[in-house]
Amino acid sequence: MLAKTTGFNLFLLFLSGLLLLFIIAPLAGMFLSVNSEQVAATLHDKEVASSISLTLWTSMLASIIFGFGAVPLAYFLARKKFFMRSFILGIINVPVVIPHSAAGIAILGFISRDSFIGSLASSVGLNLVGNPIAIILAMAFVSLPFIINASIDAFSAVPIQLEKAALNLGASSFRVFFQISLPLAWRGILTGFIMMWARGMSEFGAVVIVAYHPMVTPVLIYERFASFGLKYATPVAVVFIVITLLFFVLMRLLSKSVKTR
Image (tube, rainbow, N blue to C red; front, side, top):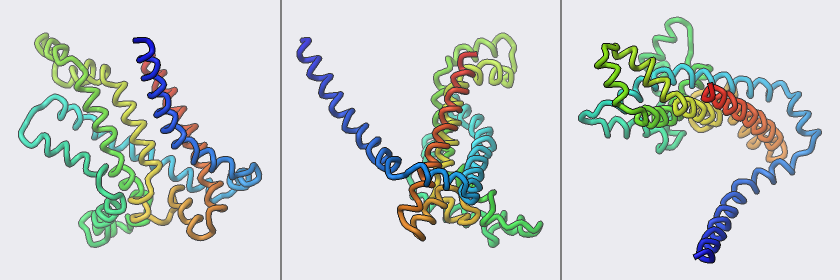
């Protein structure tokens, strides 16, 4: 029995090692192809710094604004069983399965000058296309399923008996949501928020359709690769990966701190 278990564990380790190698090898090769001088020059490049700053704050703003709307929707879907619920869940996950260039075209049609929203913005002198607002909308569109699905799972894990008991004791639905459901589901919601932020930050296909300029970093990496080749695009990619990883680790640490408290 012990020999069979050991053989199975070795089999799992072998397959896991192959998968990890597939993830690590391309990244390691990219990092090893860049020297410190290239990294230093990239860090002092104002265009790179501007694009990274734009990417970070637009993705964060997209997560905050649309995340607030996602949580009540997730709670409703987690607690209510109704006709067409499965259809709505399918719609929510559409941005995950459609090509992101198609998502960008959909957003472009939504905010172009010919649309209602686009014409309304134009009437006050605002062109949404090529605007950070368009970037925020594109990032939110492709990343919303992450926080909605995570929040649905988090609320579903909260025992409904606790909510019913509080309601029977005279608590209002608002009080039950904010004092019982939300605090107990907060861990999963925070994880979904982090995943939404990370997904929005890495978006290229939808963003490049609605706002080639100003350039977020994924678009800048592509632009430098298309214009100058791999040698000029790789340092930007390396710097962006390191910075995003640092922010991602920081968010994880903050989320663990919140969970502990």
